[in-house]
Image (cartoon, rainbow, N blue to C red; front, side, top):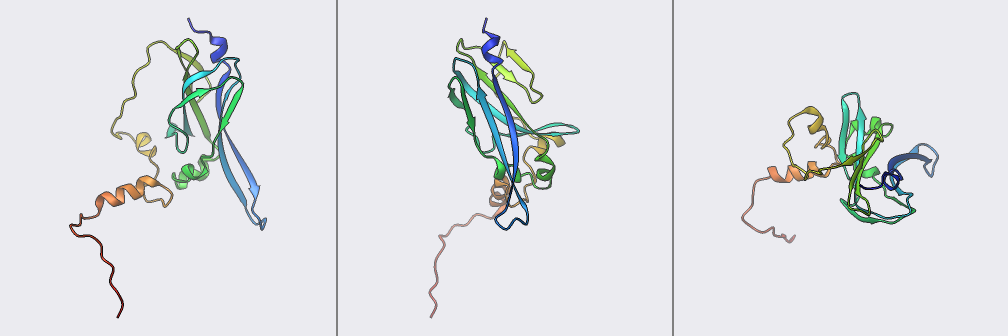
Length: 178
């Protein structure tokens, strides 16, 4: 059985900071997920998922700008990365989201056992891990995971826009002015 003492020392959280702009007329918001392994042994295949806590549950925002899988998190190491622009993709929800961001982390310990620390911080040993499953958006909460696609910061909006453009059979040409 894997040692819970190692797994209990792996955590993830999200920090929101505010710094005055150069003119000091507004505060610039930054969002930084932190992933820490305070154990004396590495953990492997680490996955961090950011979420937005709402009254209806947590909207899983995905890894946003984080690596999908971090192969090794060394002992006594903290890993950070910025997700400010990724959170902005959630449009109006983003303003509220900066106050309610949460993180979930999953990883394998040195014995190959799978552990997950949920959005509420509870550590769970996963006896029989299931492969990830892609599902169609069937609920409002699932649709909320993409954020509004008409938001200029949302890359899915640009993607859905390009899929609605008519195909062209000709190459673009440059015209010269006479």
